[in-house]
Image (cartoon, rainbow, N blue to C red; front, side, top):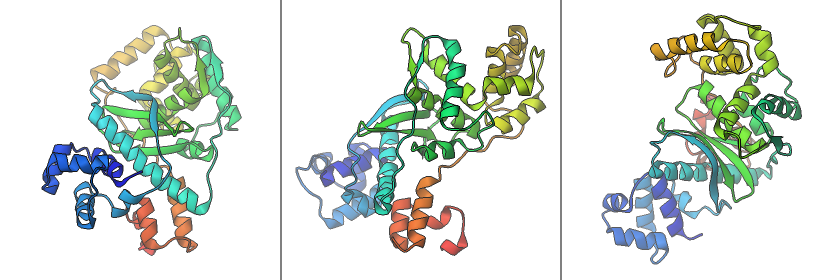
Length: 342
């Protein structure tokens, strides 16, 4: 991979056009395009200028990590997600993955992806059992999942967080056509992050009949994985006429699902009537609780595997403080606010 390609990746990651970056550098769009195509090579002062303009470490342009292709295989977005932002998200993902692969290579460690054979789905009602099957495969039982990101990382599925607008929710990306990673928006609530991740897991484990409405099905799988049917019955009982906000708030923080998602779980399993569900749904819309729910928010999770590997390598003297910061993408002292790391 030549430096020009790295310059192009960095420019897209920064969300800049050729013209915009050229203006920052004081060079023509043609000159910059020649760099990116490998026709000409920037000298050291120009590379330093590029690194500053793109807010990247100089080593970014010389990485040799084996991330050749990133293919979004499924993603959740709003209709107003622009291609420019999607490309930026992909390049942010490439940067994070390259750094992750670097520390894995240094420590000679990499968890293999641990997923069951595709679970065949021919009708929507089979989703409930499919969610329980995956829980059984991962030995999770039916209890609430305290940290979903930890569970996935334990089973070899990398989770990346990106800064994005609310037009982007999350996606699954195939890396080098070999293994999947899940990328989610850092700037959304924790319950929404978890539902998105569980939705993406559905894309990885389900073999769905094309005749079924897939998006609704994956959404139901996400809810069933986080809040299994048996637990819904146990927590809410059967034939409910109404459910109070306080009760929903407790369950939200127990299972890491939004109040509205909990109501859907009760409705789709027949534990609350269509009439009662509609009344509660109208109340949520009227008060705009579907946009921002009342009471305590559910805080976002953070993936930890990469950071723990960096800290271990640094503590054991395998890498220097500077190299640790480089792989982390910032100051490692900010990982936990630990003054001893400073």
